Image (tube, rainbow, N blue to C red; front, side, top):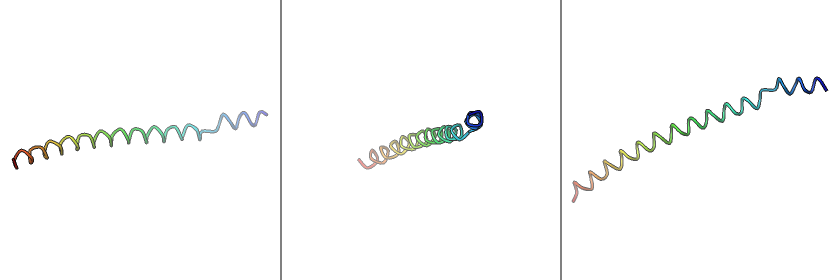
Length: 54
């Protein structure tokens, strides 16, 4: 029983999975922010083109 408990305490695979999940979430937030900025800038440029064609 003691060996089972000590193995459970030393097991870090759950912590590693959580760390990878946090890294993936951070990368997703950065990508969303960049794409939002690019989309806003692209929308502004396309509106300028539209206004220039009218």
